[in-house]
Length: 319
Image (cartoon, rainbow, N blue to C red; front, side, top):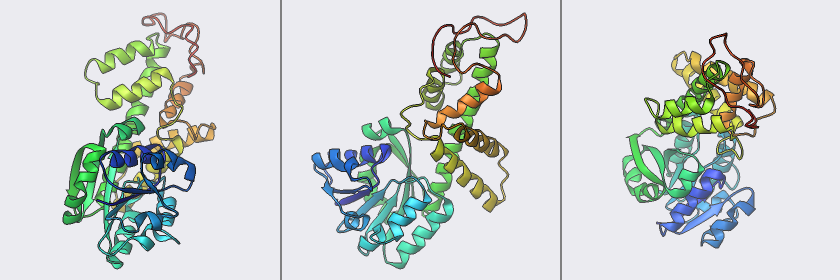
């Protein structure tokens, strides 16, 4: 099937490449045109605008940073909606607000166009290897027709129903679970580090017992290694996602006290000048609150005379 793809950031470029490798003709657009170069070399057609990428496509995917970018490149001048044919479908994989998802569905519907939400779970390496998890919602017939493309990008597709905004609500919720798990692990690492238990030892116990899910293994490893660059998803984007989660909670009358805590950790990380780092860098706030040094060097502080075990010494790892 003929496809378009708008948005070639760390996630989008891998997703678009998977579509090309599966044999689909793909037209690509990115506001920073140079990011399209590897895909063009692989056979993609360069598009001059989102409208051009959508022209003649049965489905056009978008993977963009936030509500403003999605709205501008979809409904603005030379946007996706301007080039998409009647009966063709926009598939948004962006993490956006529930409210915008509903506006997009209405705007496309008024033009006789389809709209699906196919949000994804996974980091850029998963996008490049076709190992994403896809959460799909929207009209059933279009959802069935787009499956070969989604299967090229993901290891599993979860179908929620016919309201596209439900995919966005669940994606915000799942991102929140990731961020709150990072906060929990950060507090556990900080507590045990101050009590004399090395973060590496804590990580080994966690991931070889009850806490061996990918979120614990992957983000726990980033926290222990302090590996926050280059970002797969930045602190800025995580703060945006959490604000949208709280916005959805307000709209539905659902208190989310843990969501407010996570938002404050992210905002504090932005205030420390770390907005461009990987969002797991929010774990540094728990360490700082515990009075731990910014570099894990020397013997760790102890809770008292009965400190537990030995800490990491002389690692030189920036915390």
